[in-house]
Image 1 (tube, helix red, strand yellow):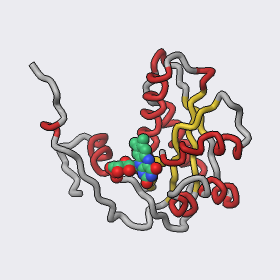
Image 2: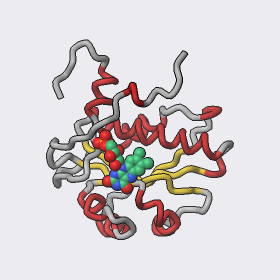
Image 3: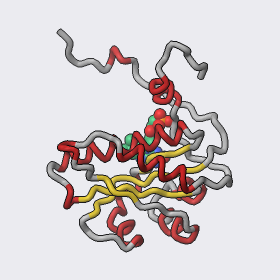
Image 4: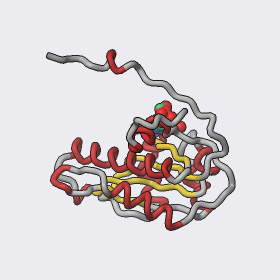
Length: 174
Ligand SMILES: Cc1cc2nc3c(=O)[nH]c(=O)nc-3n(C[C@H](O)[C@H](O)[C@H](O)COP(=O)(O)O)c2cc1C
């Protein structure tokens, strides 16, 4: 997409970010991951309760085992690092609002990854095995899996997506 000089950077990032499911072998810097987690943690949350928690999985055998828990296994195996994202039920005050907050944190992470020239995808399909993911990582029951983010350097930038026109989305205006 052509960069529109009139568009604020944040909007350019929002419009240009795509889900990346194929990665090169290039390593991802640990410091970059810390920055992405910091960006995630600056998401809004109800009462500023910050209910998100993150795991960071670099270990290839462990990535392989996580990959075995989703039909998107090729994407998980190909990623340099996996970031399972949890809701901490002990930090929770309202389940729906807390899930929304974790979603906002994930979106911040994805946008920040795009800003670093990295690629990422939000994997929700693995939630069918959310307890198995938590057990594999040896984490306590109070952590409920919300998603796994697969992160790496994009193998290509040919991803395309589409959105419905905004006019179709407005259900009320007066
Ligand atoms: C809640 C949620 C769950 C998702 N689960 C998956 C998934 O399991 N596998 C996958 O490849 N993409 C998954 N995605 C990514 C979507 O497919 C993607 O965001 C959508 O097709 C729009 O494409 P874009 O992100 O490139 O704009 C998920 C996205 C969200 C928000």
